[in-house]
Image 1 (cartoon, helix red, strand yellow):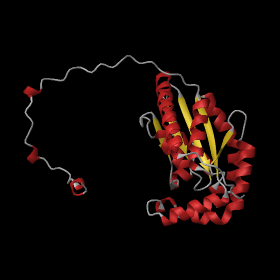
Image 2 (image 1 turned 30 degrees about the horizontal axis):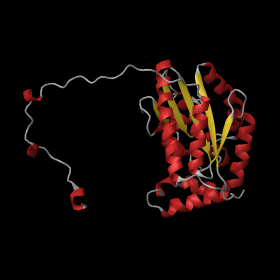
Image 3 (image 1 turned 180 degrees about the vertical axis):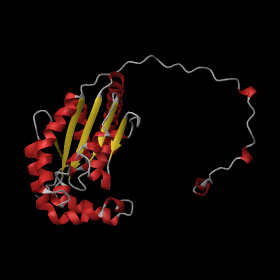
Length: 268
């Protein structure tokens, strides 16, 4: 698949719309907290598809005590012997919480399948069990939303090269990312199979065209806000109390404290 040249939104328009959405995300967060809702959002897609950037913009203005990101690493030897979904269940939200999974239990349908980190029987069992697992989550009162970030091979290549050449992004390329590049077709087949079994009526996949990062972020956030039926929560006006009389407090000498050096004075 080759990416087509598309007209991009202007930066000022993007930032304006993003700010509007982030205000709405905070309203949604407050509704979740006040109503005791439980929200889970799954972010999946190819390497360098832009999942992390979208998640970053979603949580940027939100309360980390209410909205948290789960990005699990390689399972331990003990975790490998557990029921497959067990380590993900431990991170599910309680009432009034939002959890964003930066990759999720769908690792088994993607990287584990392609790289042969699981057996064929384990893979087949996952495809059979996953829709039932998600039904259980929904019946328990969790609102589950799944996004697949779709990026073309040309755009993924460009982003990989950018990561290689930018010292602030080099950490984003793991040995597994490099190894996975050999298996583009295998990953495509695995994704198609995953969708065939898990793109269900009760929990569909929502595909985000991610070739233009700014568009993908706005489209994903807009859809998330439309999908969660939040309402604005009214709070009483805040009136700050008067401070204590400062005359009763004597501050210790400033020169007795150790301050961080001010490097900015040399820049003025």
